[in-house]
Image 1 (cartoon, one colour):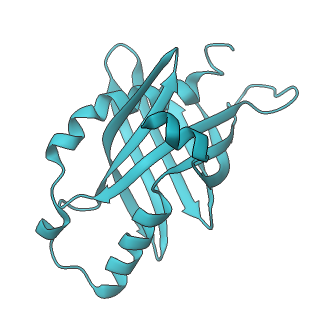
Image 2 (image 1 turned 180 degrees about the vertical axis):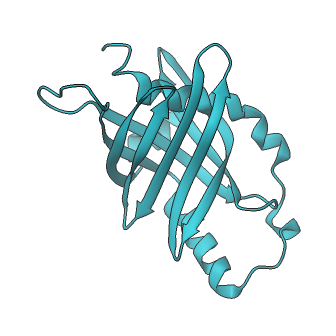
Image 3 (image 1 turned 30 degrees about the vertical axis):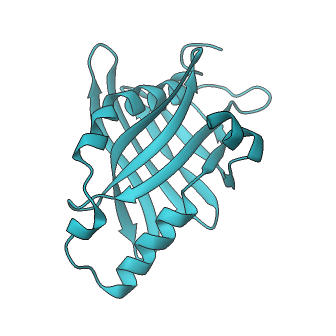
Length: 172
């Protein structure tokens, strides 16, 4: 694949690595400030729906003529937990990229449009590689959003599916 074609996958892999330290700042939910029962229900559902799932879909690169099928992407999310501070969540994700297979935690902000979660990453500076941003909307087992790496960016979209049983067994 071309360098630009790999940017979406590369962006996520690099961002996952950057936030490996996030696990050390994760705090128990009991330390979180009181939230309304309605919001707690949303939080619990979000955690449940994004545990042991794969985001499987496609991405585009703006300004690039697309010939044939769109490039594919897959992200495996092992778990999602609400952090005590603000609207930050600890995502633990399995990253398979460039011959590496690692599981890394990362702290990401989740904003809410009524009952719809939007995963956000804003201007995360990756030394030597540039700045990365994304907005990913989650709705009814689907995701869609935008991504950028410096001046290059595009769209991403797909479905959220349970991790296949054979993948779970490989992890153990």
